[in-house]
Amino acid sequence: MEDQRRSNREKSQRLLEDGDDDEEKKNDDNDDAEMSGVKSSSGNGDVYVSLGGGDEKDVDYSFWGYMEYGMEFALAPVRGAFGFTCPPCEVWTEEDNVEAGRDKDAKNPYEWTWPITFIVAFLWVSLFSFVISAVVQRWCDLLNADVGFFGMAIVAVGAEIPDTIQSVTVAKRGYGAMAVSNCLGSQICNICLGLGLPWTISAMLGKKVGIHQEKNLQKTAFFQVGIVSVVCFTLLGFAIIQGENKASLTKMKGRLYLLLYAGVLITLAIMTFS
Image 1 (cartoon, rainbow, N blue to C red):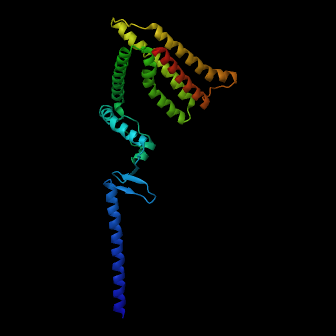
Image 2: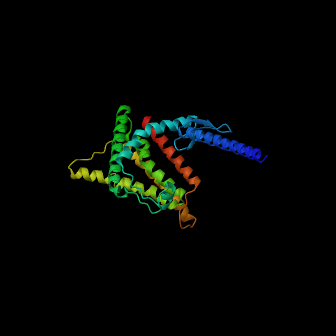
Image 3: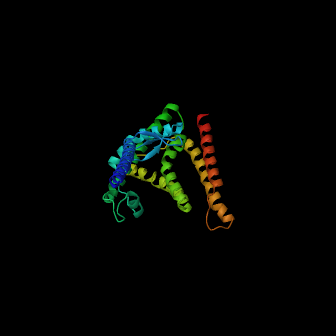
């Protein structure tokens, strides 16, 4: 009797072990499928594609999703060139080290290469600026259009995208004054360095810098003076009138600036192509 009970217990234990083995095997098969990038679906009908390492990424089949994938594919060669020529010289903070799974006191071994990164980045910016200037100049020649309009509508927008990103970044962190000063200070650098330095180098080399289509440039300059006046009045003027010790940039003022810029571009386009 005792032997039969012992035999039954051994059979039950073997059945339990076999069930655990089957469950472990099933889990291993699922892990292998996720690691290999097999498409799966969850219980609520969401479709995802598992990437290497078990990460799950939602697939966006909308128009903007395809646009995003297309942009990533088109920018891949440029990003590859940047990664190959610009050493990663960023300074690692304790938060970055914790997120990356490194020691808190770890330092970037390429941190000392920041002068190389700075020079290479400057060369890339110079190359892109030369290409944009050549393309815009060719468009103006073919369309017989005003250089000032294309400079304000295309070249200026491309030049201000980095400043816009920087201002948005610091504004999200709560540094509104830094965001505004970045916008105003960048214009001072563009005028004093962007114009003064090349003209000085050209003069030192004995080359003359010619300015053509002065009347068209005067129109653009008048519009720019008007924009600067509106910005100064809405920022500093309101602060002085209300007796505040600092200027405030509200949503209403931001929308006003966007509408003002759009109105200036539309007016210049009508004056240029009419």
